[in-house]
Length: 251
Image 1: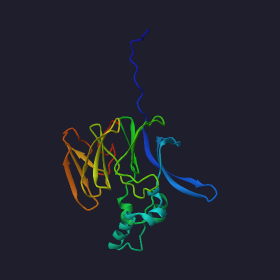
Image 2 (image 1 turned 120 degrees about the vertical axis):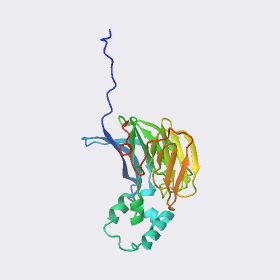
Image 3 (image 1 turned 90 degrees about the horizontal axis):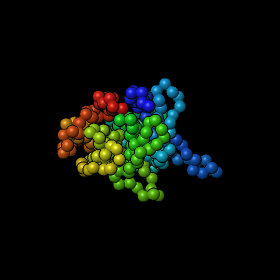
Image 4 (image 1 turned 30 degrees about the horizontal axis):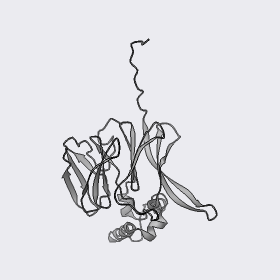
């Protein structure tokens, strides 16, 4: 018999999403390893991480040795450093740490680095690793969906430059920029792509979404704005922000 009291779903306890780099052995005999990256979560005030094994991927874009040899963006960052006096001396930029953890060795690249920047919205974790976007449950190790965005290298090729910006979320949609020069919009719940818009310049920083418009700054120095066709696309008002910085309280 019912007591007449309604049952309420317990609120989601605060948690933090983050990316973890891991060195994975390739050959036990030689001791060679490759870089891997996956999504992880930790409840506040707890030491243990929850690992999302289904989001793990090979992360050559975090491997400094491979990027130094084969990355065009690595070479461009070196030229930009040289143009402003950082050709040799890097000041206090802690390059050794950046080389080991991020695969970067230039002041310009570190200043521009955003990584995946996972965030929680509507009781889900969202992140972009390399060329893959994922949605996961912060309360378990369940991954709702994963989707590859843009053109990607073949199975035998190395992804030396992570092409995706962190996501911005608005109106049940995820908005991403790519270094290949496009903005993509996905459905938050399923990962289905609604649309993509070419902007013809590399986008390496998170978009802002306000009043039915998307605003992006490009690596070439342009500021681009276009209408999405839906005035409800709104409330992600900062570049480089997360849900809290943008005033969202649904996480």
